[in-house]
Image (tube, rainbow, N blue to C red; front, side, top):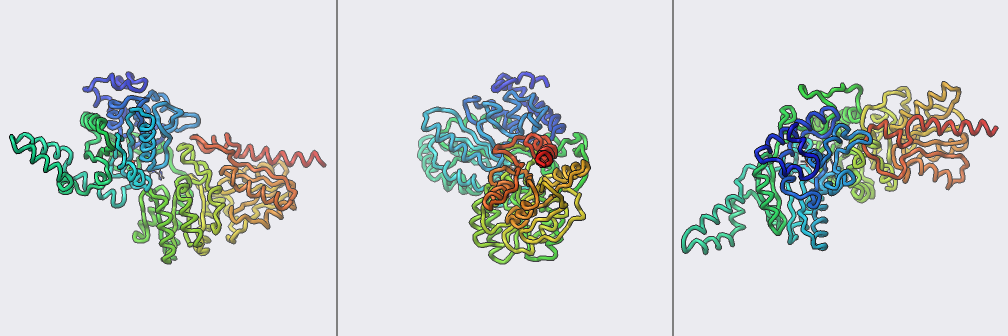
Length: 626
Ligand SMILES: Cc1ncc(C[n+]2csc(CCOP(=O)(O)OP(=O)(O)O)c2C)c(N)n1
């Protein structure tokens, strides 16, 4: 790592001799491989963006210039070049370095990212601020071809075209989202990729004409005037140019010299420029180049074989959902499935394989996915939209306005609900109860274990109205198999009837709740354990009963307290003058950074120990009162 040793902070890369650039790129790749294979993280996108990031760092002045990453998962080289090499030994771990850009981590990170398709709006914001302040920083947004499938990117392009000053958009096109990219824009880009390099050609023609004595200049002028028609001939489509954004490219994303030249020249133009960079996802690691979708985000793996170090032990909730949906698809021909660029992550690829005509990947377009599903539902189909909880946040109005007002039969399968761990604050699914439960006509459920997610899906198919099933990342709880009472709309289930305290853990928190129930039992205390099943509508009759027969209710959830299940129960007790005491264990008003789920639960006070102490507090108090 001889060259990397010279890089301790931003701009140090400028001291590296140009003949060493290729060597430095190789060292960076090795560094990323070594660390990500141990800690896990985003691999393929980072390997593909090494030369591009180096070129950006060679041309930009940090921290003055602003580099805005879309999604931010490809920013590892940027972290290495801005003095954060040491952070990689604790990448994405509790209290360690984040896997995404964070301004509080470095003054070279301009903006927090994690969700897709935001970079162009942010860059436009920075550009307008620069104009108002009269400053002269260079502003660059790096957006992938996958992220360009998100609607916000087009909304921003629509504005950026009007800009009268410099703004550089790097379109890092590796032909992949997490899976193969989809849609018209993707096809459009592939056409450009195989087309001629328009910009070079334009320059050549002008130069050649100008060199003709006497008539050269006037012919060149005429040609310039008819620029558009020439472009129409040479560029297969002119979407960006027509929007007012100069298109440059395609440029080889692994040719540092060419990237530097292109960037330097783009910086001098007083207008928005889009540089179309073509790169290879997974570049330099053969297995990742071959299977980029498997190496997008990885757990620790063996570099030689590419296989995960830890064997997957039990089925995840996603696996169970995936399998059950295929079975239901066979019985219900109106069932269709929609993903927003996550066919593997959401487990919908199995459905896609079984019923290709009834499966739709819309790209990174959650808002569109939901409204598209609403359209299909209005036309008589029964769509299941599987989206991660944190990404569904951006489709709030679509759920409300397009599904729920009309009571359309759409099943929202909300994966990664609750704490997700290493991806951190942008990805924690800890707000879904809050943002969903205020919407009329929507039922919201959370399964206690792997058997119940299947039951809930069956229920949702029969129910034929708007319904959300939220379930967590990771292994599906397999205990309590014997308790499989049929699902009844709006009804919770009492798992074990006891005294004094009623413990109500929501969904995944049942794992912790059951531990506490069993521990207390061995200590001679018999409490009541309840599975709410429906967060909305809440089983008011059951809560009333529990309040009557217990001294205290303890709710537990991996959602924020504000607008959470506990707050709804507490408010119900209060509004109905029910005298039972209540403790709501939930996430206090905060964003939750990265760490393992177990560490985070402990930190947030929703783990078995905290539940035990809370319940014990009521048991002891009652004994003392006697
Ligand atoms: C709103 C949103 N939906 C989904 C995701 C999950 N996601 C992370 S990266 C990614 C693919 C991005 O593809 P691209 O922009 O081409 O970047 P690449 O990884 O290919 O470099 C997806 C779908 C996300 N981060 N944000």
